[in-house]
Image (cartoon, rainbow, N blue to C red; front, side, top):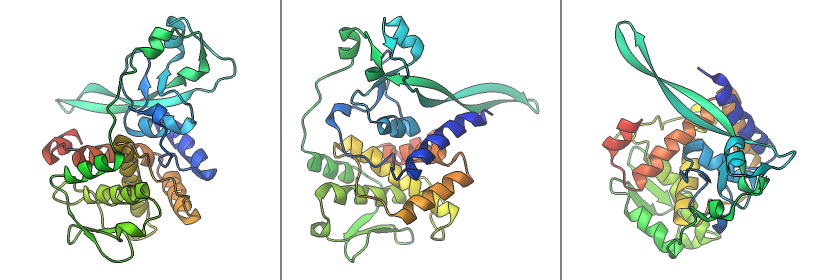
Length: 286
């Protein structure tokens, strides 16, 4: 197993958190509409890559390797720093007389299109397509309503939470939120927790506050909210995080170098479930 692949992701996330920046909480930038993608293949990045690449702050949503840039006739600008992209490679091995598939995490380096001079205009425009114009709030409501196996959502009380024992999300009154996007980001966070119910993706939800397991589940819920917010066009809640939240995540990530990658994978499955994938499909993917 290539532990270095986990290290490069962990180091990047820790550096952001320790500087007071939460990489999955960012204001929406319409120039990134469609999500980050590879310039050559047009394929969108997912999981932890979809969270970390936008955190570099480039206006272009396209990324490519040094080799890809050169093959397109471009030149990576001197002094440019690459970003790590991780991916899974599956190897077939014979163990105890049985054929087994072993997942290995690998990584390589990419540069943003803004860091590359001389890229042909056709390459930059190839994957840009006209995107439908929609009302973000209507899209949020559509996503919430489309969570077919989801929990009941009650607007009552003064705090937002998910109660696994009742399979209920409780939210304060909509009018009490400072902004409408903040309301939906909070709701998406709690719905993210709900995907871990035993009847759905069956994650461990009953965790003591401040424990490593609590921190891991909070990471999953936060990243789920980020995925859904980006999909809806509202971005993720960019309200400043408290020092205690950041410290909790830093402690969790330092304790387990795989925490970020694993949480991002779980969040991708959670978001997919809310967006319409069946429980059976998601468990099979897991």
